[in-house]
Length: 130
Image (tube, rainbow, N blue to C red; front, side):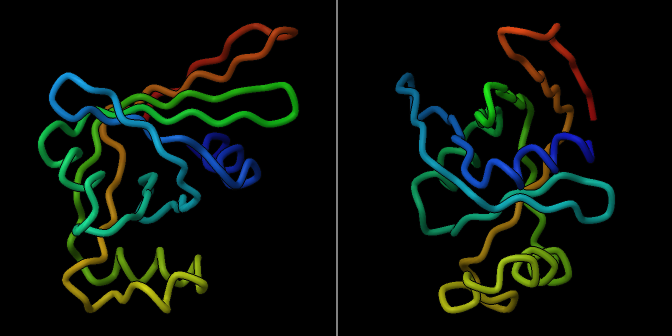
């Protein structure tokens, strides 16, 4: 999982895919964190992406960097604990103007039953599960 985190952190932007009914939705994200040995992302509960995840927690993210790409598929689980939110916001101080560990909008979610696949055109695929 550490290798997945480091790839996503260094890529800076990854793309999160959700579904809304039968329509796929993809958007850029940048927050990634490890807290209590789980891989977390962050969003706002008021956003459509949050509503999509709550309706169907199966998601996939994809990032590309230096000729390599990573796909992570799994289920996202909401963690409403203040400690989890604070840990994420400490890692991304620029978000503290929009989000707070104490507000009702900040949402952090961790991956459950995740399968990460590292790929490139020049190396064999590598899979990590966590």
